[in-house]
Length: 396
Image (cartoon, rainbow, N blue to C red):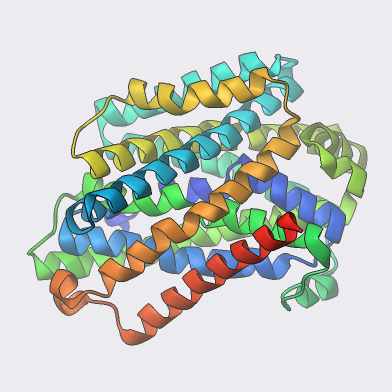
């Protein structure tokens, strides 16, 4: 199975992007271990969702956007594409901000210039995939993921944590509108819509089209389950490390900005802790920006049946994100709000995924078991309801 692993680690980068840093650090500093249950639940949902996203492509040979174009009426498909593009812009905003802020913390680079550098580096990472194939791209992204893992886990272990409070945080609780906003932000940062669209393409690009080859499909799905368990396990560990480190050492006021969080870790853990935080944030921004642009290309090609260049896709989401940076929006606030936008985009990816993977005519003998469809439907209903509650609270 080992040679078949890799695609899930690319998708996993989306689960530890700068938006995760902002929401998890803010949650830990302001509410301690209260929202641990959100991180754990979101990671379990992510495992199920990413498996279904890969499964539908392994069986049908088509990505989720391609299936949406083929099976839904044109107005519905265009609506799904439009919201997916908005989600892509919100995604790129978070990732560019993360890279830009990290470059500012490490080298004093202006935020706007840092955003441009992050965009260029992500394009270079994608150029590896375009010229040399999936394996070198997976290696480059996985290397950046390793930097993120080491940076945040080191800080979490150095900071220490309250095991009893951590265990208590697994019990679902919400304390007011602010904690609900962060809960939705964590959810949007963890279960990423563009990762749902992307995963099938990653598997197909790496292993080829397995449609109509039952033995090949079962082998790929077995490898995919192992791949996802390992990759999402790493992502879940990183997210918990972010939250627990913040809960242990940061003051609520320090988590209001990324700069404040960096200074807080430096204050509590020494200069090395602050540098590791910035390096992990930088690696997160570079890797997730490349993966997000790749996902944007998959979305456009799927919904319109036309290929697009990586450079064009980079420009489509880069320009709006740089415009936001140029307006001087506070980076930490923009990161958290971008994750809330992503959370609103999850149902538009998740419900079609549940629909397609539960269709016997499309999936054949590999159609979802009833228990799988029920679990995915419950997750989609919960996310949709959580977003609705947030809208009501904001409106009031």
